[in-house]
Image (cartoon, rainbow, N blue to C red; front, side, top):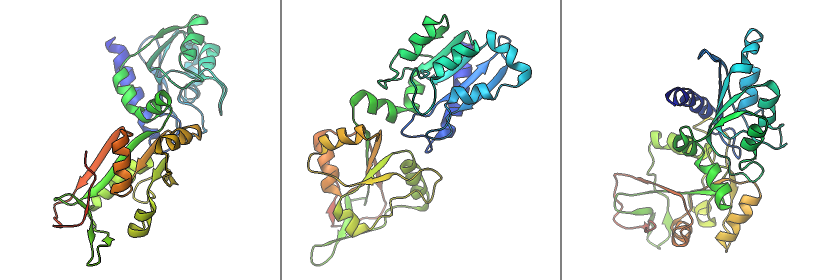
Length: 287
């Protein structure tokens, strides 16, 4: 078991290299280890629509090492797929090249896989070990797993506020105006978080007052799709899931954010609190 953990840790390291580039697919890493403990192949999912981690790992095996595949183990952070999507099934690839043992971190809840990959392997006589470092593998793809388990995107609420709990100032006429709370470091951190979600939601008032660009200019990765809230947020979340959105960041004003909070419609909240105080202004949401 310690040996399996050792190589699964390496697979997790590889999987993270796809951060911000593979969604709505999950981040996946794969390591092929010969019987003598030598790593003969490594791979990860580089980008959405591209070859899966298992394919890249197999393709990385040198010709001089291919005879070792028939007595090797492949470590994969997520259950190998069993269906034809943008790429052929990875479970079939593993069977066809004759790898006799597969170690899996997380089960895949996606309805086209959901245990079928493991069943396909076992039916072909492949030994499958499940749930190695499952907690860490689940955490790696919490957005993907949450979406397919709940039928809605994984939702993160995010806002910045003053030390005394205000999101914006108010002018003499009672109209809100933006106040800069972020630092250069926190801006980079936020752009990284944006690169990890499929979509970002802000309301019309936020667009009007703050005029946010909502891109990832301070961090490499894909910019999220912009969506505007509709009246029935729960129904909208189900629709977004059907459209392939597995993760959503809500960066709106206090009214929109409070609506998500009141509905219990969130999985994560990030609040950036500045040192400055405003004394008065537009109050932040309450939990």
